[in-house]
Length: 296
Image (cartoon, rainbow, N blue to C red):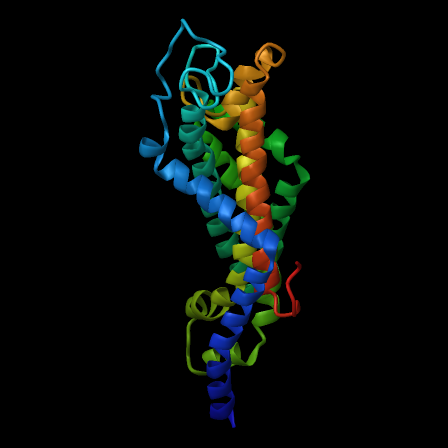
């Protein structure tokens, strides 16, 4: 009987994966989000070929050129630098922040969450109280305080954001582990003599990856917003390095004389965050077995 059930699960697995993909494809907002993310990442990865000018090249004789003037697709800034090229190159910094921050926070949260949920007891108590301590501090205030101590810069921004956002992953993985540790496949692994580390990271953790992928997608959007906010405050990427948040900071004093300098980076940030949120919602619907149909 057990072999029959295993065979049935094996046969159904490709079908479930296909059904999830079909649900994702039918979700128009999710498809739109995927297209937006792919276009933005593709443009930044191929910045050498997409950018029309050197993002650092100054033309002090032609500052504040309007959109489409003299071969500058999105105009120039106060130093005569091409805005389009700086947007493309600045995307590398902004999107890299999202990937690295999620990588750091998800790694810490996965490890601590599965350990906390599997062992329980005083280990669970200590880890969860530490997460409560992080949740007690306002996220942005905590990040500003740490960066003020470490100094501004892209590397410090990524490190700090990764270290202050892991509790969300730890809480979610702990909850999933608590539900999975009493499942028959875990009991079978224990009866077969599997060690705790193998059970946690080979049997339990892979079953937690679905929600983690969704949270990571949404976490990238939050990381991009946070990094842009810190750069806007002068604590992130430092001039003359292009980055969407720092471009907003540089352009804020020219809001009335050259509004395109602040509108364009703001719209790009909004587009990137919107695309990641649409993508995350679509993945959640496709990976959640309780949702039979995707939203149209």
